[in-house]
Length: 469
Image 1: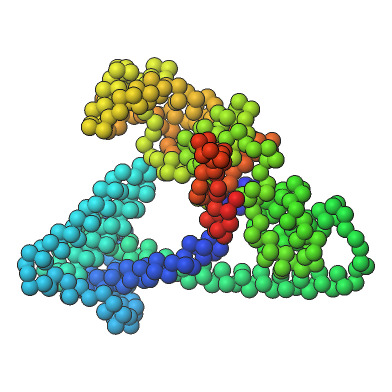
Image 2: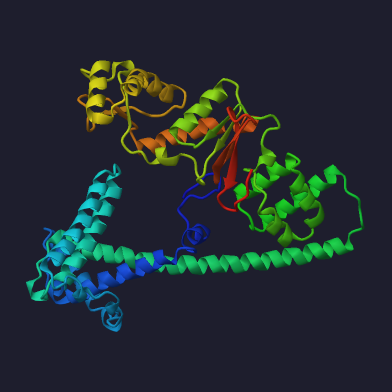
């Protein structure tokens, strides 16, 4: 995405991220191809019906242009040349059970799947996301409707079904093109990276051979280590974030890294390979003194707890198993319920809020927890606004509530907005050394005193290389 830090003004292809996501999941790409085959098979079967389909949106010029484009699609050679590929999906073998009840059950199961997905999409707050999701599901549904009809002569499609069918096929087609382009771009960059690495290694070896033998002190080791890191960054063999991470570790006199720099500064290829296992998330870069708290998870609760400790002068280590902070809180879309900051709510009261919550909870209602939720809600919302500068300016009445008491941002999703500002506030302490954030790290064990009564730490495991710390 656009980034001021990386001087990037537009969206750009990220073949490295693409490969990380899909290299070990070829089934995802196969599913994409299979879906495209299903769409083309449906369009092929309905080609006679679609060829003469009358498009009437009210704009004569656009209707005529749309009809021409639709017929051009139906006349394309791909629908003829790839006809043998369409057999990858044969709908005729479905619903062929001798037992009528089994056929009916399978049909109901199909409808139930689409109904469930549609219901999930209704919960999406982003209107554009919801529109694209529903359009795609309608496209798949229309394709199956065409394929399952016994005779194309009996086919009847609504205008929105035709629009969804063609648009879904177009999106799948674009995705397949992007898969090919990203794969090609990735291997081009890999070849360039290897070529640059070999050239840098050869040049460094020549320089080492010509250089006089010298003894190293700590400053010499630091100097050559930073030089080796700079070489990797200059050749774009490591990302900016990784370069910064290695520089920070070198300046902190990371012993293993300095040893690598001392012995492998003349061989960038080996220095790169061996340094990949050294991460700032490891125990080696934690504060010398044990932190006041280890916070497991970086959702709203974890970040709020961390920020409160930091504001009071404490030190914190945040352990997050995902690559990004935020957890499930980052995906929250509705808002935060509270009564009644600055009297913003209308005809509301703590008692009404409490009763609404009890009624919604039903049999599992915990009155003590509900009382904490209700009585502390105003304090929580004001803290997010005042301390973390979170925009919660909109007030809405959502399901289960009898008054407007759901506080939401004016732009974007509530969870993403809250997490963005909270992590910004927490990260402001990184320069002081009072907070360390360990991503890609899963807590696998609690460490206790010998008696086992008091937790004194945790054992973390890196989710990428399995190292424990």
